Image 1 (cartoon, rainbow, N blue to C red):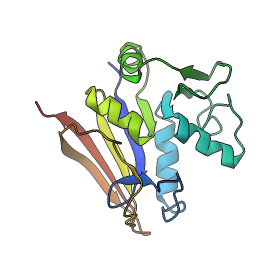
Image 2 (cartoon, rainbow, N blue to C red; image 1 turned 60 degrees about the vertical axis):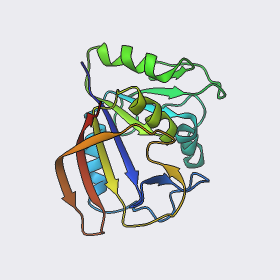
Image 3 (cartoon, rainbow, N blue to C red; image 1 turned 90 degrees about the horizontal axis):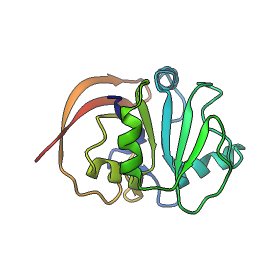
Length: 183
């Protein structure tokens, strides 16, 4: 079965963005970027909620255009939304069904690990369904105080087993955890 890896940037107080979706204050340059780009190439699918996907529009992406294909040209994008509309393409699919049901099926298909890019509510749904296997956090040296929570409104309790950590000169720390679901 394929792993689902939540690979995400977060503030020290566990927000993945400000309430308005801005990532102001997060590190965007430094040695960690090349490590992130290498990880993107280990995935063959990426999952995103609508807001995460639409964040790319400010960077020039158009509705129906897959993200990150300039880095990984084979990366299949699955966008979870009931409100956005676009035509599916070879590297992008709009998913309107319940996320846990879709992801359960996707994990059984052959392939490389699946990247959960964001957002927080999607991550919370998948955590609640016990579908996230690994958490990779680019922990930014900033406290936002409020914003979009790492796991949305999820109240699921999990244990985290650290499998790796790497500090960077700019203060960012890359933390990798295996998720252990508590019963």
